[in-house]
Image (tube, rainbow, N blue to C red; front, side, top):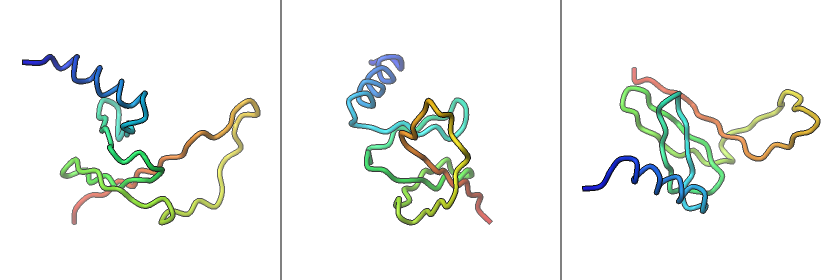
Length: 84
């Protein structure tokens, strides 16, 4: 058997090494994504399913002014969906 703490420690080590991306869909609900290329997500709330969306499929025309001592490192868009 293996402890849950060991699994999460290993996942976070993989994330720090750039092998996984961490996607936080809501407080307490984290996904680890093996696709480390820049991209966005659909999150289907009914099933808890996370689907990749190509980066070039999302257009962002404006952003709020960021603090002067900061730079944008990355931008993640999560489009939340519910089934009809």
